[in-house]
Image (cartoon, rainbow, N blue to C red; front, side, top):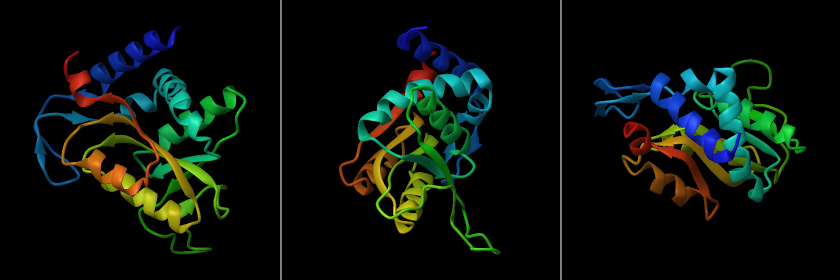
Length: 187
């Protein structure tokens, strides 16, 4: 399957299984007339495979050694991208950023093997709206010693200034989106 065909198929899956056209309250507290539950597709083997295959070539030029994001939204994408990288002969470990520090043991904010000062990482997430989840993941990864070299979301809602807020904190590292909400809403 060509990259164009894979992209079209993933868009179809997202439109059919992840896009809900109804009034909802978003994490930002704002009301929207649609909701994107991208995990409905990322937790499906076909959706995971396609999202990983499409994400890998966008992130590869930045040469991360690990990929991660804020749990729970980023978790399936982290695994899909890490597996796609491995299939291409590249080892990118995965990591999850907790929403609060672990209360026992070493009390880490991050779960995963990447933690070494200066490790280049890519931050990923399922949906970008206001940027809060991605900004938290960026902050926590950097505090743990990571050097953020790229970021990627499956869907950019292009709302609430999320892209601009994240790009400002990326210090020149690229921010990729597989799709915009407008693209999916048009299907």
